[in-house]
Amino acid sequence: MVRNTVRQGPAHHACPQSGDENRPRAFSLIELLVVLAMVTLLAAWLLPALARSKDRARTTACQNHLRQLQTCWYLYAGDNADVLPPNNSVYSLTSGSPLARGASWCPGNARLDVEPTNIQNGLLFPYNRSTAIYRCPADRSTVETPDGQPLPFPRTRSYNMSQSVNGWPEYDPQLSRYLPSYKKLTEIRSPAPAQLMVFLDVHEDAIVDSLFGIPAIGVWGDVREWWDVPADRHGQGCNLSFADGHVEHWRWRVPKRVPSLWAAKPVPAEELPDYRRVQQAVRQSWSTP
Image (cartoon, rainbow, N blue to C red; front, side, top):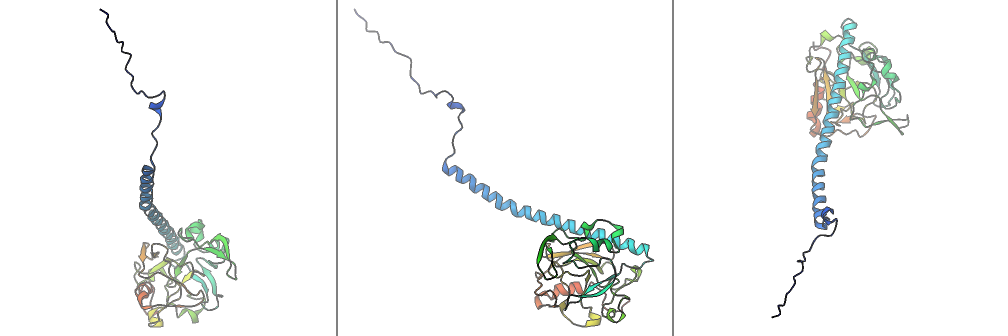
């Protein structure tokens, strides 16, 4: 009997070709779109946080600059029989020309000074020879020509000293009676040292000279106008130092705007709380102790 022997060959299985097991799997279009959407969401979440972090860092650096200037201020008084640093570099609101050029903690015009020479000639410079502490890190403004054309150089100064600090004490006796100030550190009474501002961050469209002026209530009555305008580049606020040595950050209710360089700015009703807050940080009259 003949047997039919069927020979079964080896089973044929689908096997990967050589190297397929190491080949990366390609993303589908949908998967790529999902990844792109996730990256976009993460960026939208992280970038504002990063911007806020940078703003806080600049605010902190600005406050450190003010503390260093405040230390210089104290050291000057200690070396000069309690007399505060003179504050006699003042420009006219109407013409932009200098009114007083006497001794000053920092002379010059912040809008025109390309070099830090005026800072170096100031009375505080010997106590800290860093010109960087005179400029706020958040101040993006640049210097300009006398006719107002911008130049590609950062300004050298962002801060002013309050009129209450030895401002026009003897340079112009007739004019100084309109700006009550303290000549000596131990004379400061009203406002108290913890409330009397010394240095503050000034708006880039308002800063010119180095004295921050504002009508004192005891002399000017209920006048409501900014002579100089505080900055609002720190989260709609600015930094200030005080006669007791501490530094504060003040946030404003209203953004600060400077419509005209050489004119006093009327204070609208919604901005009045900000204005009063600054106004109350200066000496109000010569008759107050």
